Image (cartoon, rainbow, N blue to C red; front, side, top):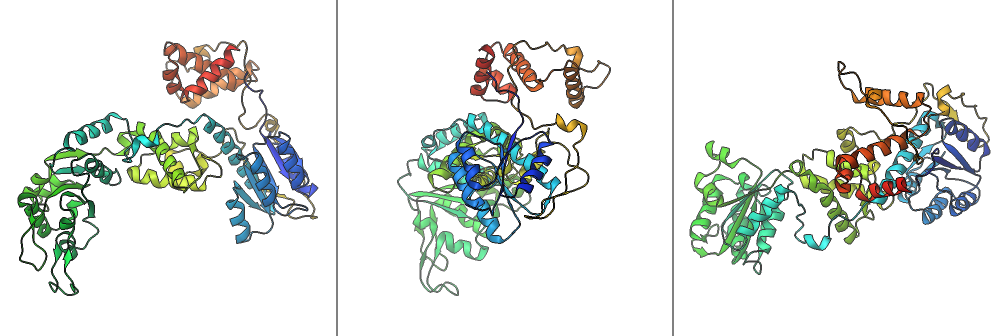
Length: 530
């Protein structure tokens, strides 16, 4: 059975009765169910006895145990509680301690009512987001991706095929693709599957070494060959004999150095800077660039003969935006890696957060995604990454709002709630007439006999342009006129039944269309059948 429709519950913990009353009035008028506790001990007891509030608003300084201690005790009972701490003492220590122990946020006294309402709405939205993370399933076996290259998309399958074709040979390989796509991982994968895997592998970033030093880095130098050359130095090509050298960003290499690289590829020999001895080297070269080498050849910025020597086999690594279907697997792999290295505690990601990651265009490709996952896993307060944990620019770019769609608009004039203990409290204004029915989105009850929805009731006439907001508006009004009180449950069931019918009972495909997991779909179908 689906859970009964009810308001989100807020637990207010404060030893000041006036603050409990004021906050209760303000938030209760917005449709939230209010529970109160006069001490940290009482609040802990309520949570231990089964109260599962969507939000806890709690003072930091109270008689008895403090808000920080209460937070820790509550989190030991329910690790996923969203807790907002209240304080009149905004010290650095307070802020650091609050966030260190997993508070969703903290607010300063005296309160601005609009700010409290906004934070409450966002925290409850995050709680709802967290519930969706319970459906998260492990997507990859970490041990299957030792090379660190994750992806089952057609674009990546083509990359793997070419790696398999060239790995066992000594052919020179040119890896191209945008910055951050993982070109070095491809080079390492070729090396690990090659006949030279027992030999050395070294990577050189040609763009990071000044032109006057790169020859010494690659080929070595003799003592006294230039100022500062106090000893003989063995270069990377000699060090890498019978192994593989990866020349990253080769498009940034100076023309003079390109000439010497060409000699290595043609003759298999080098000379140290300042030396006269010809030294034979047996090295496989894999080069990479994010530049258009063909265009550089036309503009005489890259040697044509070197280009052809490098471009024996070419592997183009697709940009992340070209293989978005791989993002869930990549995120899962990255989370497992962070947990293995003990760099973060988050092991899963909510549905909404994952949808946001998939929708983002990723100009920085996999490298940018890795940074975002690391950031989000570190700031996550529990074991799940929520939308609120993602960097603001990611959420803003995707166009998602942190607050739930059903959150009421803030009152036009700010008011103050109990600024400090013992001070007079201003009564909150009477709620607007519709406030009694405005509440955060809640789980819908099962509908044993849903009223059929006819297309004509919700779709604009053919002569009118179809607008989704208009459809939603007409649908809502139609159902309210029928005095339906379980709109979400009704629409959810109708959509699920239509998806199942469209796919001929294929639950995996229906779940994909609906944007939910197959487990969630199965639960709903079981509930409808009970």
